[in-house]
Length: 389
Ligand code: PMP
Ligand code: GLU
Image (cartoon, rainbow, N blue to C red; front, side):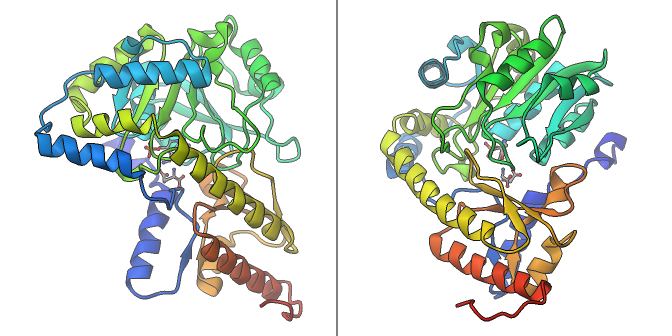
């Protein structure tokens, strides 16, 4: 095996999605809150379009950066929703946002370059950096400080080898949405430095505090930012594999070279369906409302339990839970309560007493999960278990 690949950790979230599926198929009464995946069906209009295109015979290579009409629509969306001003030539459509992130990192950094990753952070960033021969540098953000990004913190980890900072807003796993002050801190950090910002905005449409901010919309950052987004979360299209990246030509041209030799082009009928997705505003609003309802219930219920603290997520569909009484509880929760969450250590160093639960699950499942977690905690706390329904 290649020496670099040997060092790559598997994806905890993907592993647990697979484990939950296997356990359920074997008949176990498991509630999986591990995978970050909408439980909704893809809106019908999107599915109809894909079927129509397949039946029409639109099944040949779609060579290049993506269908011009889809890239045009994405450019309009980026302008309208995010105030990111890029031409359609500066957009590349990819099979999933994960691939967009990989292509961006792989084509922007050189071997030995350092990439700052504020933690807690999604499981794949560090591994993608390693696959790209870079060195991931975890920048631990403080729970007590609300995981705020500060120049003073980033500066401690910057060296002459720093080439990139990876941001995720709304954040997986914390649910934090980047704010104006944090952008100003970032501007201070990258000004006069040759550093690219990779801004992962895949949870953009799941936002409980109003519109998010895109770093790429700032004059000071526009020529330093690659914006990543996709269709998995906003339109419940995880299995379709569709995402994109947008940014200045110097980065997009590099990605384009890598793209032509690896992906060739993203499936044409899926791209056609994506043009319809970008018009499914009502479906998105309905899903947002339901996520909000679930968040209100789930976060409040978890916070009511003795020994768990959950930060109110500003976006996304995760509860990032800090347990006060024990380390490494994910294994025990599965064993004793049949509830699966992702262990905090998957999101960086120092998060052994955390678990990420996804609330992109039905209300019934969330209610049952809370009941089981409560029972488990009562047992651990050795308190009387009397008021659980
Ligand atoms: N970024 C983050 C933060 C994610 O949680 C995910 C979920 N898999 C992705 C990127 C990738 O999304 P996809 O490849 O399904 O578009
Ligand atoms: N993004 C989701 C998660 O964090 C899906 C799994 C993955 O790609 O890691 O659970």
